[in-house]
Image 1: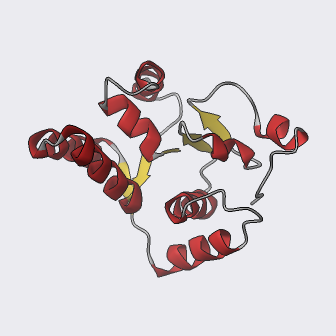
Image 2: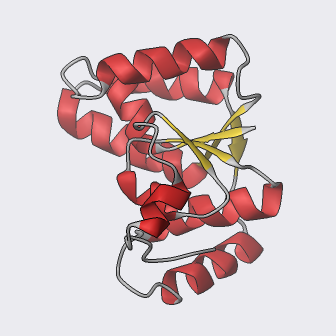
Length: 153
């Protein structure tokens, strides 16, 4: 499984996004089954449709995107247990690095054994034990070695 962060989905859906070309390549790899089942959460879904509605001002386009997401990914819902875990992760940060939604992503990955995250959010590179798909090949170990690790899970 691979968690699709909202930054990847927005970049893929928005031709003007600076990461659009990279997102197209990641999605091609996903279509080939390279990383297993693509997963989103209800929080990611909310972020994506909200951001895309603001950017496109088109309910029709956002409706189409939402339907595509619901039909092509595994949607995991943030339940009470996941919410509590995410809140704990959020509170344990040494620096304010991750949003609460990012913390729900981390919690979902932890609980479901997901080690691949497709994102353009560089903060995810600071996590140990995850493969970040979409960004440059800098590894989490490289980030930690350079002193940029703000939070470890």
